[in-house]
Length: 474
Ligand code: ATP
Image (cartoon, rainbow, N blue to C red; front, top):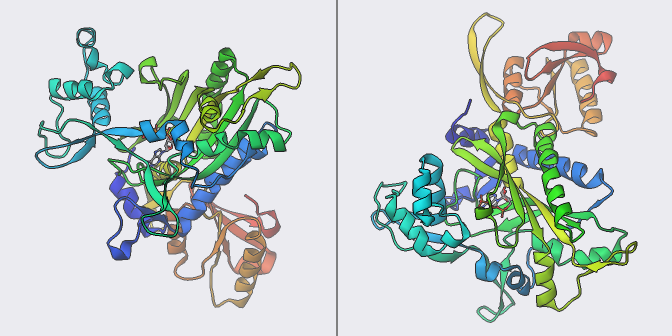
């Protein structure tokens, strides 16, 4: 069951998860600000990731690099010359699209026969040799790929559009040095590889994790928070021996680890996830293998996480451009080599969006009067639910009930994010918590004053059970 993206966007705003950026000034295209519940959700996803992949492992460390880096970093990584998308404009309605995405979408929607593939090399328009602008133009013309907005088939030739945001460092306008806002967090890890080796006890194989903002001047941002120009990533670079067999095995092992994390720690529905292996024709020239974790978004399957075996490409490039020796000395074998690297790269902004889409539900139920009603309920996994417990004194004028409720809030909120709500009918208060996905509502009533018990209402089943106050835990 899908709910439309429009439904999710409206709920996210109404329930303080995400607002349009700079809204009082008319907004900024595709910018989003997280509200009070959105920020709690984000923190919980970050914590789940950090705990599982950094704190609970002996072969992982974390770091946090600066967003602004020496521009040579981006020359070495290939971003200055190569981080671009092919941009085409519809001549009729001026709609701007990415040629490669138009082709990808066309292939996904149409069955292209094997004869066509054999006859025309550019049918496989994602193959490296077909990535040239001429091949893309040929594909778009041959298959009469229509403009998604107006349906016309008359567009400009693709032109290269670099996705990096440029800015200036320096106090005098126009005289500063050109620098970039980082388009990925990964390079911050590669340029610190030697620092971490020299200052910690980490030995290969080991990984470095980082979470942070990245910026891409996307040609076609949109779909709420799916493709935005400022977003957050959770990346790991895992350094291995320079042995392809070991690298490929490590890449293969990531399938289970990755899927399990999304399902067990974040609570994403298994049947909405799939693992897609990139064909040889989709790989970057330095990559020995890439797997994507994809989610079934309301507008189709989309990448949540990429896992790429990048070999020694990045460290070799940084050795070349910086002149520094980034080789590893194996203390046991005495071998000296440039390590290989596998990169699991998760989108944090897309994870927040996915968690919201996956949790949102509208459910029909029969109320106590026997009438049919519909409630909105966000079925977040309790690990990531923005609020874990709502504490609700039944009668706010009852001093004893309020005293118990306030005392409970003080104790529980030291451990979990809680909310105290004493206004309105109890049914309405439950509905409010259902909408933000609070797993448990604790109600303090007359009996609580007599025997020290409270009721706990389960968000999903709406069942209430009576427990002793001391027994409450997540
Ligand atoms: P796409 O094909 O969707 O453009 P990508 O392959 O360029 O993604 P990577 O460079 O592998 O993405 O980045 C790793 C992760 O960062 C992606 O899996 C995605 O979750 C996230 N990401 C990338 N670009 C954006 C964006 N513009 N907005 C939000 N998240 C993004």
